[in-house]
Length: 250
Image: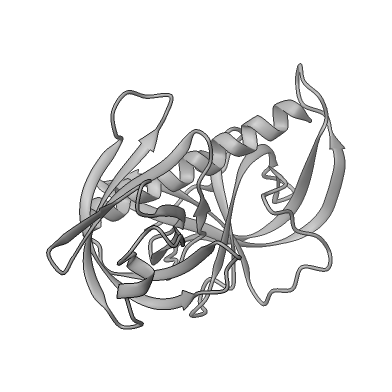
């Protein structure tokens, strides 16, 4: 399938910068296109969070975005490399921001990210959850909190107190599988953006995360295409909104 770069990568489009896309552990960072020069094959994008620099190490770099084609949602992209880091990029009607100019290579191709950026929870975007284990229910925020989330997993934080017995951290072991219900929340909108169940597996337990908290790493072991798209939109929107907020602050 042929893709026209001019109809896809234009100013104001939300994009993802993906490092080592063909590896088992790609890293994705969200950004926004500020400008594009299709004759020079350059695109100017917002500096992502956390930022990248000349010292950032990678073997492959792709600029990607999501498009709807023939009733299918596809991630497509171009291979690229950074050629300029701008400290004070002039925004129309706003304060200057940090930006990166990348040189891209055609053709535009369909891509696939095996892993994904892990979204930390913010004051606006958060995830409510319920875990069912041993016929008991554990809920946010009384029993645990969601630290971050991606397509592949979640991080849970549990407060350890002497008053609480049978906390999740005392019951779970690496390899334990459970059912978790998720509710994706944008506090600027009423209700939840979406809710769905997932099956999860404990892959890491860090009892020394802090003096008072335990960190549990969970792997999502089943996620339908519909729910993956819902989660992708949630993560992508949250990252773009955070970039916009930082850009306004300069």
